[in-house]
View 1 (cartoon, helix red, strand yellow):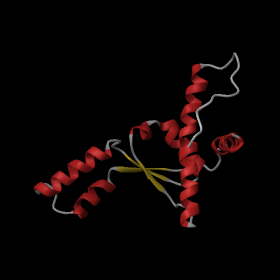
View 2 (cartoon, rainbow, N blue to C red):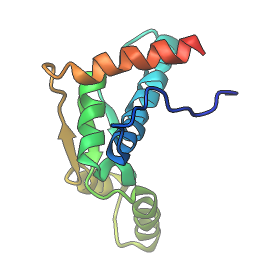
View 3 (cartoon, helix red, strand yellow):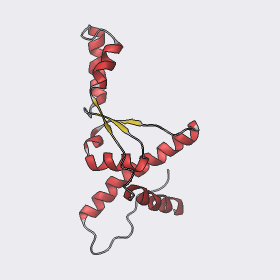
View 4 (tube, one colour):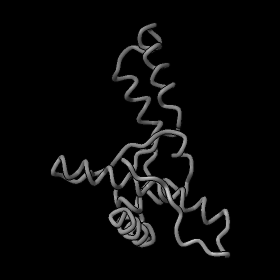
Length: 137
């Protein structure tokens, strides 16, 4: 928790695109750290995870994450699921929706699955470097 951000290995050839990519790659690396901790606590591997929020609209990040974790991601088509959940609850209370089961059926249609590419070594190799840097600090 006391760590601060740093950028290492920059050369005169480093561009803003390299920095943006590094920042985007760090998001899946951090998520993998959490997923590994969860799996350790549960004493079981995760079979899939559900993802939502604005970052899930970034195809690079979401595919990098799926390839890194090696499991499918169930991605909401609507990134604003908090607002959607509030609308569902309001609709349920006001009678627009008849039951939780009806909402579940509607929601299943709003999910797409992002599958991992087992042949993409780049995320896993990058994660090894990430771990090395984190553990060295």
